[in-house]
Image 1 (cartoon, each protein chain N blue to C red):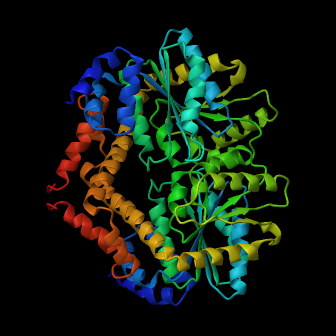
Image 2 (image 1 turned 60 degrees about the vertical axis):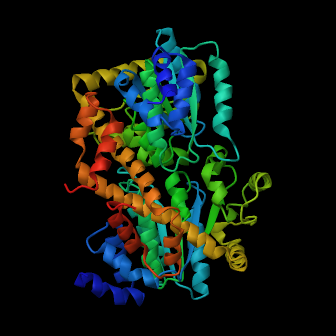
Image 3 (image 1 turned 135 degrees about the vertical axis):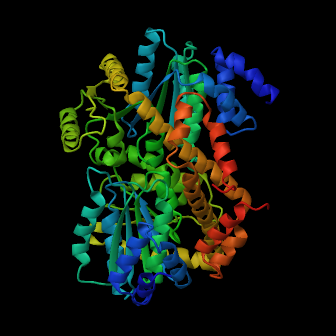
Length: 316
Length: 316
């Protein structure tokens, strides 16, 4: 193992934020040594409670996550936050967001916030987020919160990494609530109706109840609905209690291990897919020669793919 | 080749809607013979103009697509529509949507609509959509329109398949416009501001202009902004004209081939990844044994993945 990587391990495990930041950057960029680092840290992971929080833009995710973080800090637990932020070359949102939020917690090393951009991750975002969570976990953070905008498959994949998944709804989003329903609603272990002092909170609650009455989860858990006003902290203690309640349920029913197993089966597939993609790229190069044959209709892409795969076992 | 597959080819190429429907189902479900069918059809593809249309829920995509379809039908061109619809077990949206929309065009075999659900596709949705588009193309449809909700990486991948990408915005979406900006705005060849009779249309236009002033596309094309009111057909002819204008630009600058090449390079990578993932899944089985080792911290997942990949070349 690279000596720089080795030198990071001890301070990182002792909770040093600068080592943590460096380790995350290595993992996020898949820099050299990233795989060694993860292998070395993995045995120390699995102790943190990983919470996934998702909701539409404007649902107040960040505020709620910050309030939860404060709640856990009062209980002397350390917190790591991963904010997965769909950014674009035009907005640079991830970096900006980091800076603004860091100011709030600057004086408390017990809270570490890291933003991650969607851009450029090419489908590997869920994997990278999982790896970053592993690093935070191994660094001794008691709670790791993963916060995403709940809109696409990426987000569903990310949130599935968590031990507990919290879906944040807000009144008056109209079509948005419908959008987030698709794919995300099913994975909620706990629903939060944030901004619950706004008009329409009851309607959202009724909608969730109706949806719940249509289908029973395979684990027979009925996700509770917690009403919050994140901006003034209302309901945050109740949310924390609901989280404990679900964890207790998982333990009692021996579902925690089952969920963990299932998550790892999924994650292994994703890791394999990413690794396969790397390998495919290596074998294919930029693929321009193949693509040119296809564009000119000299060959069909299905046969090309079969040919490349047949060649994978052979030396290049 | 399976005789059933062979028997589909001729009526399909002659434009028979029932054969088209059957062929699409085979491809969509990756049923036996799917690969043979695609290989046989590929040489006849590449003639349709493929339009990708994307926008937030509520932006009026379906209405606009339907209006465009009517426009092309007046020019005696045949149309295939692929509506990629994030559905959920609760809504069954894709199927319902299909039925409602089919009624409208029931009497016209020159318009064929097919809805596809996001659910269960596990990252392969872009590939399946591409394959379905190939089938429609080979069936002789002049225009193939692919319609998606513009929210996630899946959608970006799907829209990239198109010869021309149209991003549909609407006034008064607030945060939503910001959301769709992330990742989707960059790929627009043409912007549509639909519901342009609503308040705020000018603001959306200004925002797009501002964004455009910040970065120049590598092909030096400045995407035009077309204002429409899809519900009454306003601006649809202008949109069709903008599409022709962009296609002419592509031809003149010899960019069409370049774009095609690039798209096929990307698509080959995705096809390879999917095929290799299938292979990895075969080797891994359900992965429960590996996952159990990981949950019990007997092994780390990074080494497990390396081991599986190393074993791929070897006979099982």
